[in-house]
Image (cartoon, rainbow, N blue to C red; front, side, top):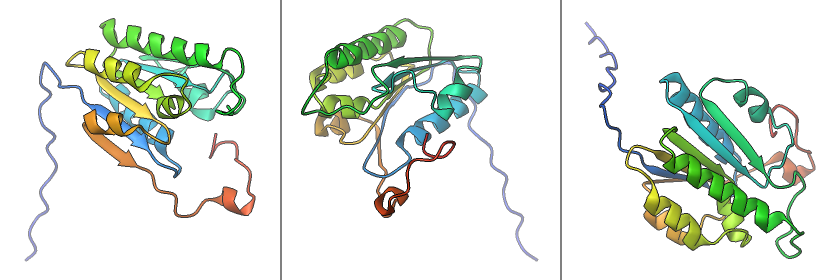
Length: 188
């Protein structure tokens, strides 16, 4: 007779959570999607979430459409919806990234959020829109109970060093490589 599979018993929630620093990086697809998955999980447990979108402007990405309608989420978008050329920065691009970082810091320190997501901040650092020292300072100032997620390609090695969890999304194959454009509902 086969053994009965044991059922999963999640740990009891503790009154004080230890918030970690997570990074989703790499050239593969799925960094923002992974962060949004963490957001959905947090919301399912009644946690409050703040999301700062770096370099994504007001474009209505699918996740933005749904998340702004959910209770418990504050989502703010900073910058242009146009792609940024790091070799030819336009006026205001650096200022928008600085505003995003300041807003995320305020949300993180304000006591009203359990999870703070800085979407595309790694690329903002790589493009010199915000300094790695500024993001390291944000991490250093993180309250104990706040979870912090940083997404974007090209995560700085110092950010990787101080993070608790780092996941690299590896591109093995992508439809863009064969000329397939981004598709509504799947890539944005």
